[in-house]
Length: 210
Image 1 (cartoon, rainbow, N blue to C red):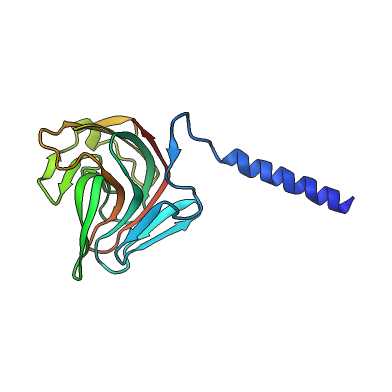
Image 2: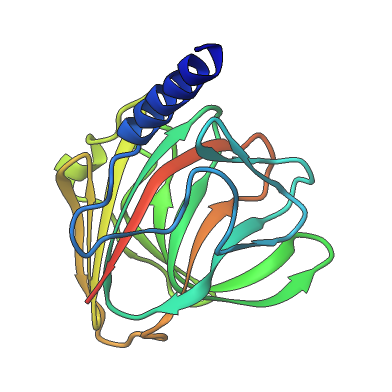
C-alpha cells in the first residue's frame, strides 16, 4: 500500500506540474523552455542563466552581451515578458547578426533593436538600428507611458517584410515601414547594454512564423 500511495502522490504532483505549464496557442512555438538555454547562444562575457523559470541577464564584465537564437527568422510575431530588477538598458533585436568581438566593449551586433528599459520615459518599444541609422522610430506619446515599473511587462512585436509593429502592455508603441531595410532575416537577440548595473528577467518567449 505504501508503494501504491507514493505512486499516486507522484502522479498527482506530476499532474499539478503539467497544469502550471500553459501550452502555446495554435501556431505559437516557445523559444524558451523554462529550464535551460537550449536553442540559444551566449555572446560575450556577461551573465545569462535560467533561474526560477526565467532567463536572468546580469552585468558582470561591464561590456555588451547578447543571447541569440540559434535559428534565423524572417517574418513573425513575437511575444515575451520582461521585468527590470535594476536600472540599465536592454533590448530585443530582430534580423540580427553578431559581426565580431571587441576586447573593450564585447560583441558587435547589427540589426533592428526594440528598446527595453525599466525606467519610465526611456523609450521602451521604440526602434533603434544598431550598426546603422540609430533611432528610426520613437514611441508614440501613449506608448511612452505604457511601461509598468516594478513588475512584468508584455512586449509584442510583429514583423512582416519591411513593416514592424511593437506593442507594450497592449498599447501600440511603434508602427514603422522601413524604406531601406538593411536585413530581412536574421537572429532574435536579447541584450545587456554596456555600462554595468543591468539586471533583467525574461519569460514566456513565444514566436509564430508567417
